[in-house]
View 1 (cartoon, rainbow, N blue to C red):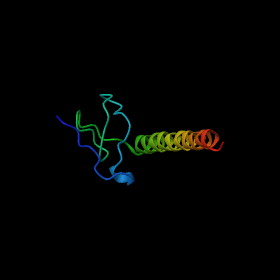
View 2: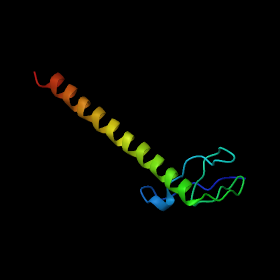
View 3: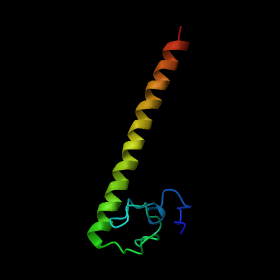
View 4: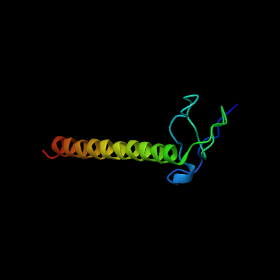
Amino acid sequence: MKPEKPSIIGMSEFEPSARCPRCNLIMYLGNRCPHCDHLLSQPEQKAQKEFWVKTRNKGYIRGFIFFTLAIYVLYLLFST
């Protein structure tokens, strides 16, 4: 069985949830696992959403640091 993949980036209802607690495969689109048909409970849904918000924010922070350092290094290289 092929899991559905998100097609609209940035909308929380289309973002992937984390791993299914029962079969440990990544779930997409909705609260029901396409592999084992497990329906997430309300606390599990909240935990999944918090997990992906933290992961997304960590990526934004790393990207900001990288591009800030890259611009600084380019400035130092080409300023003289």
